[in-house]
Length: 265
Image 1: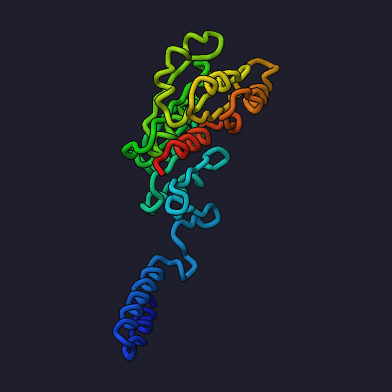
Image 2: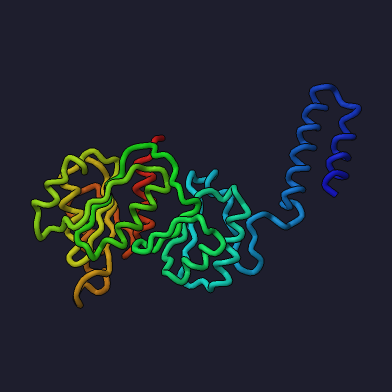
């Protein structure tokens, strides 16, 4: 069918002027390519029948590829999605987020060369991040317990093409710790600040630097922290301007936004 339709388009150009013939030939080539890809037959690439539809155009449309949120997906669903990504190179860099050991093992069956970071619960395909461009991103976390979310943010920004520095355990209980890292913070194009408990660190950092601060509350804390709601409200009420807030434990979203802010436009 592909060749027949393309030939019909091309044959219609025989009686046209040279310039129009060239345009018709280009149209025939484009049509043949579309038919070969299955787009015009209703079998678009990236379709995982009954499960998912990969957004293969997202990288071209937005500048950054799609991610796969693994929570809530069955092993068979994850396996099918990973196969579709493997078989569609245009999917580009793909991050599988919230991947515990069981879900990561399913993805790695299909993509054995992928990189798995257990603490961040992140699988990256391909394993090698792109060369860094744009301005650096710094990810700072208030406590060691915030590291899983901080590492998710750091790896996300890294795989979206930024040089990333992680600064750990610099919460407001010891302000001398964050002050010691001021030269690094002030060299960043964007800063992710991850904190649970009272969530005060983003406002402190924003008052010391010129870069935008992406605040990410975590669910770390005792009862009245309400699973991250208390630090979320603190961050939303930050006194220092230039603070944007993402959802609780959303390291991926924080790293993505920071990477976009620090990009070279």
